[in-house]
Image 1 (cartoon, rainbow, N blue to C red):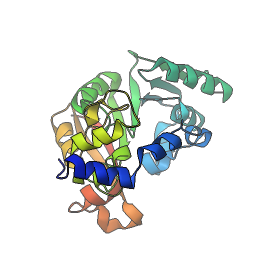
Image 2: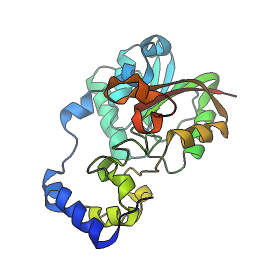
Image 3: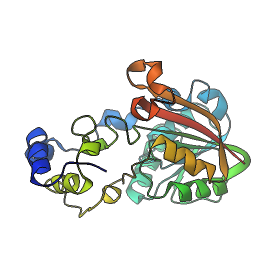
Image 4: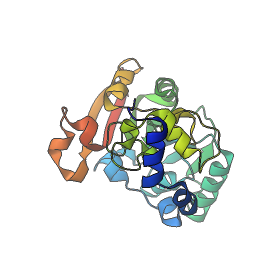
Length: 253
């Protein structure tokens, strides 16, 4: 992917997004970003009704913001899963501070099956989405459902996330050139999009749906939130470029 590379790409990228500015502007997520979410936007207007009294597994819970909110909205039990210990510790502290420590549990793994599995802004980062779906199948009750919401997807103007220094930059420049530009202010040794912190698997809507077809799940519901609120941009011919967020409800086959 990408057509521009070499010194020409380096010159443009350094002019548009100087490494010095990236270094000075880098910081941890602010307090507000760690304490706010919009669950209805990501999981639909009937989300609160769905999870009331249910066991909910928050897949990739991070610092527990979403888990705590789900607990406050009436879930019977919330299990937050993440691979990073410091995030789990922070999530436990947050749940206790917010008065839902008796409802929330945070762990690296569990054998308890859930009524709902939530996955928000994660599938475009998983190294192997097909393996994640298999794992979710193992963690879900027979009649349970996966609520997955993610975006921007790969062909969105900013689908390259930090590599989208302007719209579709991640599609215009070669991967090697973008990684070399990034290495001027990130020293984690990444050589591909997949190797950066958090990962970036170049997931398109079509590829996600093909992955689901080969998984233990089928798509029960699908909807998309279009850019600028223009519904035509979420239509099937345009959704790869015009959908800001895609939402899926998956059930077992």
